[in-house]
Length: 104
Image: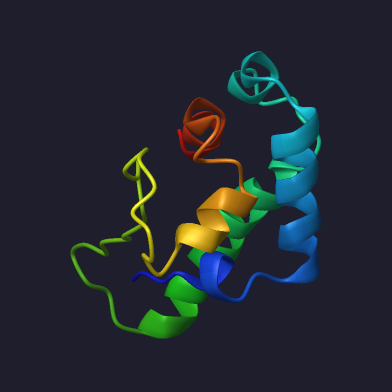
């Protein structure tokens, strides 16, 4: 299971949560799981992803389900990459440690 929906077509709640999380939170507060906006991503990646996988599987019971996601991206801008604009909007090119703390 995988996808880039939050990078390609983020919802309004995702945009607002990312903005508040990355603009108004410190790395320390992110690591302590206390910043505004983090709850949305926990719900999105834990609760909603679990619901989606269960719906996708239906009644089948595989031994394993593998969920894929981006981890730590290249910190250098790549001039024209498909996600360059999104990463710039998330502040990744200026302060990658903040988004990396969110991903952890």
